[in-house]
Image (cartoon, rainbow, N blue to C red; front, side):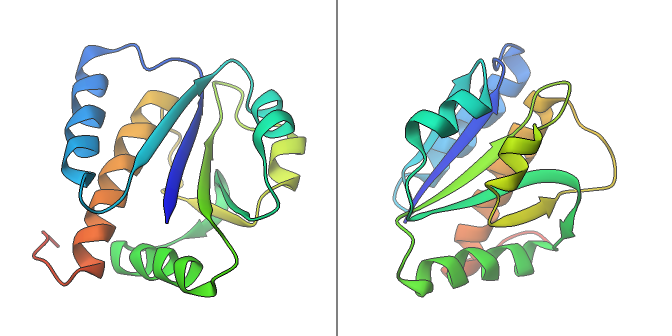
Length: 142
């Protein structure tokens, strides 16, 4: 399963960059995680979205999952057999457009709090790593 994250904006802050890079490094051997920093999520979708992409939008109004449920969601998508890629969409300071939200297969909320887009990327990357540990029956911190 391929997992891509589309981030509207840039990953600028060194402490977020370092954290994201650390979890990308830890994910080698589980999955190939790609992070796409884009000026517009909508433009990215118009040029790169495929019919066999499972699109997860990060939205405050989405469904909240705990770490085990999040891992199970990834496993469910993988086991479905139709999808080749999970595509996470993180909006910029104005959030995601209606267009991006309409492309969503699953609306996911990490919290009712609002995060910086860089912060959301860091948290999401860590949760993907945690999911891989859970799915492979490896220790993880609860």
